[in-house]
Length: 315
Image 1: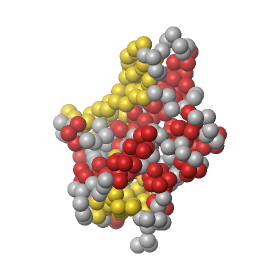
Image 2: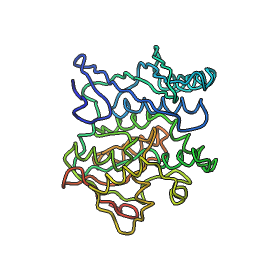
Image 3: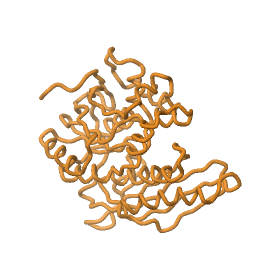
């Protein structure tokens, strides 16, 4: 066992041979968008993301379904499964079966098995002082999907969020491998600050982040200002406050966005400074246009953060 639950990483990793290891993970949730097909696509991309965060390639999947068959048609379930199946196929993996239960609330996700070379596993415990922090997708999906549930999300914001959530982290993972990145995690329910703090704690380091460099989805700030902040985001912010030193220029809305609970978010990478140009070139090659350098890892109290307003100084 190379990585298990005690490491609080994104997935388990088991060595089978000197040159072969399996990555094992599972994830499922209730609908966060109205369209059944898009729900399937998002849930599948989210489940696959943990394999990419460990530096692996998804290979085999099992569907996990809870469905209220007396309230929702099986045709809708078919749309969910079609969206999930097409996303898995796009990742070069296969769905081999699964399990369905009768459930009063619809749920969908995957159990995923991936493969990775044992020497190329990326973990949340390998960040080192001087590393640059790179985020590969914009944040704000929690705020936008909450506004969607309340019937007030603008169509362009929903489209942008859906596109982000259905984009696989495959290209980001490939770019990280090309650049020799060894520290990675994906940004999901604990938000950017929560997952970053976990990485820093596991690595025994601290970090500085520049809020102005963090990419955001269009409309997210306005919707947060209007109060469409999910409960998970508020809990994330309360937890972040315990380990974060905030720039006084950052208001409560800005802080909430940085803690926003994400679904199928991007990869958060810690890359040695000398390898940063190679990583950025590789991210452009793999069509990851939202990727941005958002901060720097430093020596200090493990798991803590300093958040500045504005963008990083030129180096």
